[in-house]
Image (cartoon, rainbow, N blue to C red; front, side):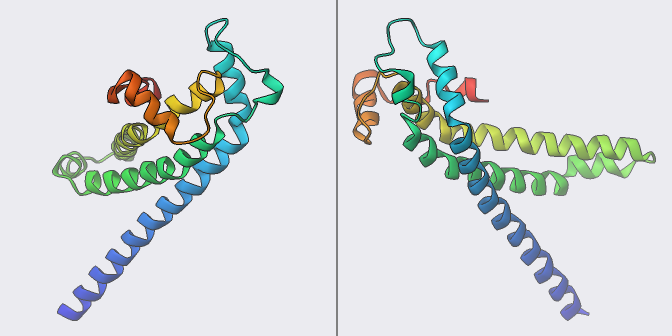
Length: 177
């Protein structure tokens, strides 16, 4: 009997690990593709929101300016989101909160609502975590799109830290969530 239990536990662990890595990789690929495809629209939006007189380059020549920080952030952010989502979802489904809520439910609609709450909380946790990773890249990308920063290297980020402090890297964190 203990061999059967061990086999089930191993299969369950393999399935959980497979789901985690699948979410991690698919999140990285999806994030990179979406950011690359929609980047020109993001540049136009950023330029429309910039203060008049701050944009120094014509739109046609800088539609993809700042795409390197966006691409550099896409894969890690997508991976962090889906990894955090999967881990949070797993922990929430195993939690005493979930087990107490489900124990007394007779109606399927209440169970659907509870399961939906688990997915919503896991997604919110994933979003908060990935936004923490994305904020520094987003700040750099937007400054490059607006023409405030013209350098295309990591020295731009170092310049921002020297001039505005380390907290400048997380300045847009709350707006990303």
